[in-house]
Length: 601
Image (cartoon, rainbow, N blue to C red; front, side, top):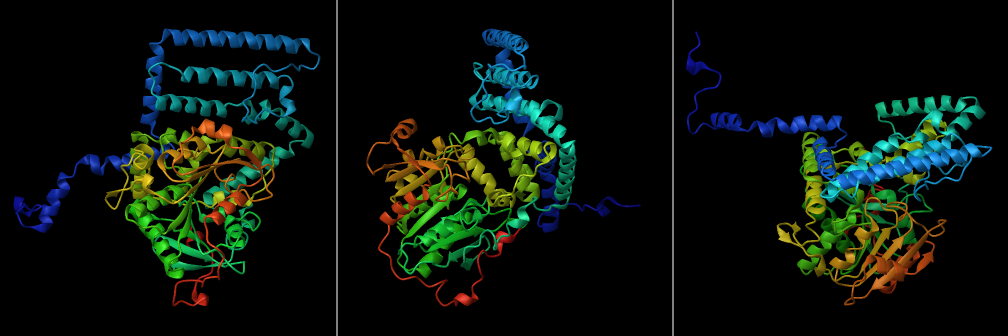
């Protein structure tokens, strides 16, 4: 017989470390041990979307709509008017010989789904006109409901738009005239090729293989191929110093801080469109950070770690290579936000090593971050934290899914139509290959980033702290060159423009054509490029974004030469080329660029 005292869990006596641990374990709330893995499992089935957040948005919209009889009456009248318009359109079609009539529902300017003339033929013209009417009605239904919060309204409008995009007549074989014509002309061979493309994509997805065509863009050979050496490596970054291509260089080196949500070589693509190579050719000593692709062991990296091991460590190395030289610092996307925090901390501490600050598609105020705000609320972030807590990081597929939803036609439906229905593989470009070379985000850092910047807007409102002490962007005295892009869905230009309200010094603002990546990778000679530029001198009033737009003259071509002119105006006279690498190290002993971290998958 087993006595009570022989029970596997021995009686507790004060002072026993083992038994203290057992009792402590027994007192851990189930909400701490059970809920996070359950939430993470739920997130896997909901594409990392908080269903509770969607339910709250739906309830907010529906309850307010039910108590608004006037809004419901307006929607009924709108539906009846659309039915009348569609009936009149059908009558006009019936009266024409070829079933062609002038469409009455105009396609939005940024919607390319129905531009092919085949959509004007019966019955496809009726299908796409009906689809456009549905879009208008649902937009009216989900917006302008009195009492609904702005966030919930935006979520409902977005969700209904996503469902309508799924049902677009262009997505299906028998309702897409372009696909039907191709199928008839090729005897169905396009569908055979499409089926083979689909099978290839499935196999690649299962095996984790790269995107088709990306093998033509090998890192270090075809992209990220500007000559240089890795002059510093720590647990988080490799610092690349690029070899000069001119006989003299400006005394102020350039430090590029890219975002770690992407690999750095978006700024060093092919030889003809590499921003790094362009800067080197203009007579600058260029340094660039290459971030480590984090894994589970990096889960506890923080924003302060990225500042200290990233910006601070690289500035220290550059100062050792080029003593007493001030630095032109350049930050892209999230790297620009990090650089702004670092510059504010340096200003707080009396550190004046920055000669200038260039921010490329980078936000410092997150009150209007565009459609990414749809995924930013307490419920969404909490779910993401539970999911990241299990893996230790945010995976590339999770980030890709969010961006695909934001641009579902460009990144998902148009590709499916071309690859699987038309049987045409799109030609892989260097930018597309880079976009497919994904990275991860450490759990702790990403949580801090979302909560402190997106959710709390701490940086713009003066609450952001680095190493426990607050930083203020208004303390930065270095001149600012800020670039935004017209069609940026990640950092909308109106949001980027708020840099004028946060920095008190000289701000030169550029608005260029293109999106978040293509607008920045805008080399001279690139067709159909244009930009606007206007400088706000120190101490002068700030214009509203719309006033700025009306006053900034439009210029054709790339913004890169204008930036070089600005950098030259804030630089000293050319001087001798500096040594490669830290003092005491032979250049031949330094690893060749692009280094090791960029190759990590």
